[in-house]
Image 1 (cartoon, rainbow, N blue to C red):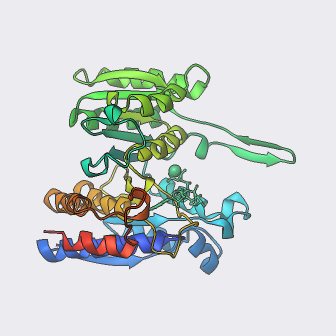
Image 2: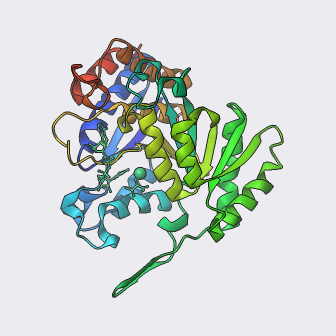
Length: 353
Ligand SMILES: NC(=O)c1ccc[n+]([C@@H]2O[C@H](COP(=O)([O-])OP(=O)(O)OC[C@H]3O[C@@H](n4cnc5c(N)ncnc54)[C@H](O)[C@@H]3O)[C@@H](O)[C@H]2O)c1
Ligand SMILES: CC(C)[C@H](C(=O)O)[C@@H](O)C(=O)O
Ligand SMILES: [Mg+2]
């Protein structure tokens, strides 16, 4: 079959990592007899430079005509002093909101081959780590009322019951396919939105009696992630908490360059991107780890295109490459030779069977 994929490479390391992910996807197409038709579109700093806005209408149209979106990363110091409405990050946020992609799945899986790279004590991660962080992506403080008046600024954290309910349902459904445990993370000892969050998650849980639910404050969750990460199966949380906890979880798995994500809504369209940013400090140097983006493509095959065998072939190829000892700079141990973004992409592509 022919699949239409929208591609937004973005800024910084975005183009480098997306190029490698596309090579991997093309190889999957060759091996399994599919064609992937790519349409490039602009967002973020690259879009600001070309069109003056971080998310041109044309980009949304390309996405709406595609089965899925592969996204690199946006942002960088060049655009940091722009007003928030025309910053690169605003393009990304508008994309998620406009396409109603409220469910952000961020799996933190530690590959056995990388257990020596994990900064935690070996006994803490003995037997591996497999946690799914489910981040609400289109609400909360990111999208609440905001303004600056002289020396005063305000960002409101806002949630409706409806927004909480729909992400809670997703959390319980995902847990049913796993170890049937959900930890809902909030700050209900302080925040009104978190009190509504906890109450709504409790109510939703009644429809999933086979899933065990517990609650945790976000400060405690941040601590528990590095002291006892194996207690978690599915973590469901609001937008900003999920952003922060997923960067933390990524380090347990070895590097932020390893964590993929899927952003889904109510129709079959999905956006796939690494959880990391545009890494301006290493951009254009072939140092970036492309694995998070490559595994994001695997998630695209699994969640949106309905091709689980093909998705597995990517995961197997990544595992094989790591097992054979190939490491980009971020996952190489001291004294170990690191390969480039492009070499890692090539090796993984060759390992697609
Ligand atoms: N989804 C996105 O587009 C996204 C996500 C996060 C940050 N950002 C933007 O990216 C810019 C830089 O943000 P930041 O520095 O806080 O976060 P970042 O994730 O870009 O980088 C943090 C650190 O991790 C390293 N890193 C990130 N990805 C890596 C990879 N694939 N391989 C190896 N090392 C990697 C970087 O070199 C840096 O040292 C900012 O403009 C920010 O707003 C964009
Ligand atoms: C760049 C920024 C707006 C974005 C977010 O906070 O959602 C990023 O950190 C992410 O995790 O995708
Ligand atoms: Mg983030």
